[in-house]
Length: 269
Image (cartoon, rainbow, N blue to C red; front, side):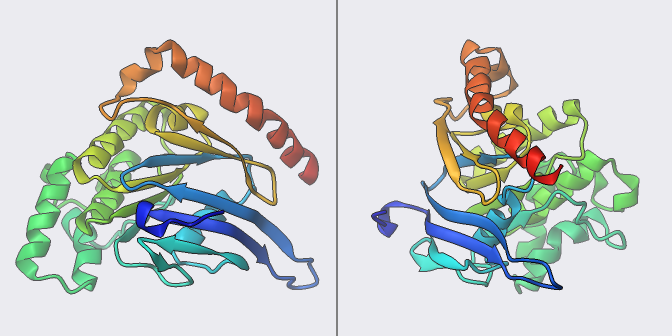
């Protein structure tokens, strides 16, 4: 693979991750020779069967783990076991701090980064307003719905003004209606910030609606077996689901993913 770091935002070249043998259990090959280039400002989603290494891929991109082989570059600098400046991560689990108000939760990362108090306040107020949470700034997470708590987590990432946002099933625990609304909020955020976004999701619908491109992964060890371009405009919204191409893209991706999902099921049965 030819790496043109000046032309890309994120580059993975032949990235492999093997979890070493432990406690009498054999080594686990999670990812195998993953190569991918993300363009600046792209919305890229990853779908694949359970256990195929999607979250491992995100951890490597975030610098939370190191590849066993291959290289990862973000903005030309190598990523290797340390979270790069300009990268923010939102996980599926509720990551709000229950003892902090919504405002303090959103401000947490910026305060740790040492930003001036006035700047933190300005960013937090903007992020909460953007996510429709201004009226809940003094509330605590226990007073919010699941969807609202996830919006707090996204606001916290937004306050850091990341150039790369990594999202690991952030809406997985939400009902379908809330997922659709959160998807629209995410698209607005993407357009407003110009960030590059990589979304891990189990939902083919969600991937097709939100993404510029979709990477379809194989069963473990995970590798990309197809990259699908959606062709949507940047101003897409939930109405996109009514486009005939939406159903065609769903079918195309499921046609690739079905056999890999069956392989994953057979491997644990």
